Length: 211
Picture 1 (cartoon, helix red, strand yellow):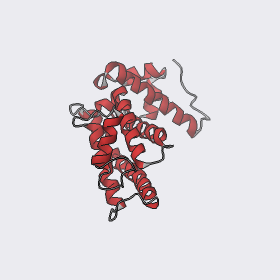
Picture 2: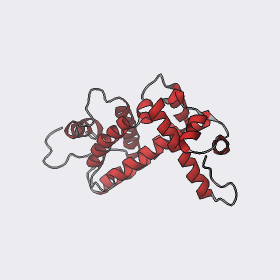
Picture 3: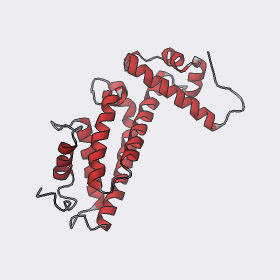
Picture 4: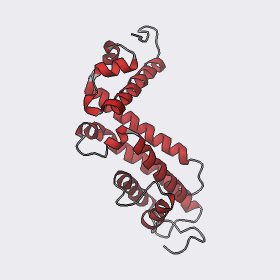
């Protein structure tokens, strides 16, 4: 079985091996489900020895599951931010982000499983990262709201920090449970964003009609 060199390797090489292991773990989850993932199965999938897995994840399966779930969530939000980065307005970024994010979640067993309450292992594994994820999204939205304010599109009296926190909770809530909205439909999602997300925060675009 292939293995990485144990001497002379730098931090970059170790990081590459860790990502190789976590990518293999994700493939195992996709194929066999979370509860059937084992260190042996991941080692075989990654074409590495169990010794190597334990070298990088000394806490064993629980550490591997936790860090893989957190890694996958981080990749999800990075992909989403890049996908909407060139869009000019906050409304367009939120609409595209919700549509793309919903489709990505449906294609990812790990991301979809995070929405299933009976999968306590994955949910509890991600608890330490929830506050970090919330903060990253909130800071990103704060920047967008400040840009809206600079462009004169923010409604009078809106507090940027309060608005960013509200929008963060709305995004996470609706992506977890759309409440009857089809977030893969761009028109429905735009209506939701304009009426429920931004209705009291941002001045509507010219020609968009009353809210």
